Length: 506
Image (cartoon, rainbow, N blue to C red; front, side):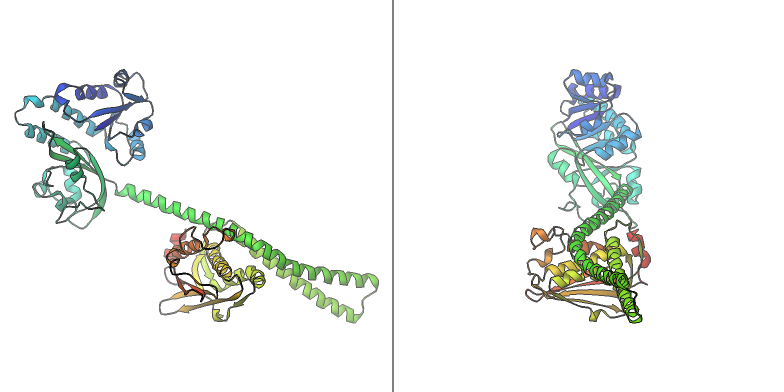
């Protein structure tokens, strides 16, 4: 076992000297390094004299590949927290309180040769360990039987020490009838007995009332003079709250990543829209210019007659309509491209679809694709969600259908309500080439695409899946090769799970 010390003072020096004494030479330990900000600390100087690795930054010590155990000797809780955060999972940790016990264990070890009953001495050392730390501690036989257990371990399991002693550890910590060793939950005791070295695992422990908590479990073998493992000390630390904090942070990071990917995917889609919208805006602008020039020329030539004034009014009405059409297109384009904060609110899916179809109408026309929306109906399709994300979801589905019909075809948008289940659904159907059976399991995977590189990077459908899932909805696909594809998205109705969805998006 390779041990590293954080803190190079007198206790470090004492432990180094004991590990090097003759009675403890059979103890399979080697000093890997010493970390201390004071280069004149006595233990630090001794380690440097012996040629042992020394550093002023404990992170460099934790980076050593051969390191098995770190002993924290400073007693500073801030340093202990930093060590817990930076150390590899495979490296064990002994805090300041446990290091005092470890020091006493080595002191006892120096007297081992003077004892007739070696196993009795090991038992006394184990007893000292079980009563000297705030973590759960058990002393186990190689056959899983509990010989000693401390108060903290009893509290976690919901038993007394008398109830636990003599029983198997998996009966107490896992409420199980058989050992917990499996590929999913490897038993560190088995590994320590087999290798004679410390082992580590992450286990979910259960108590007698059905409660559970996650524990960081470390096992340390106790060996006799022959090198046989006679008992194992198991130390476990409850990390349930720590895991919950990590999970919450990770969840927020995933949400942030999704928001960033939505914006990036919007920019990719925006590039596809720009050329189409530019051509579409040119037509009404041309009409506006022609009408304006015609009116200006007539007014310059002569005073308009009553009949001409009536014509001017018609032309001006058409000019206003075309200008409003341009403004509406530009407004939707700007709204689509703008970076917006997630803001769940009441939405009508029909209105969102109208905005998306307005932006894509010209491109569909250029691609010789006929749009059918008769099956969409006229009733509002209201859900609770984020405007920007659902708009992006619809746009991705339209572009996916457009790219599936390179020779033209029919794009059908349908929708409706299920009053029994209180759900709202939207369907997007194309008459393209369909999806090959071998590709169907992968279509929602990020960066999976059967299209050419010029058509994107394969994020479109994965973004749709992520957005729909975050809104507590589901997406289904029906397709046969050569017969097109239908993507159906179902959301909870406006009165169901609104608060849950709002909390998930906020």
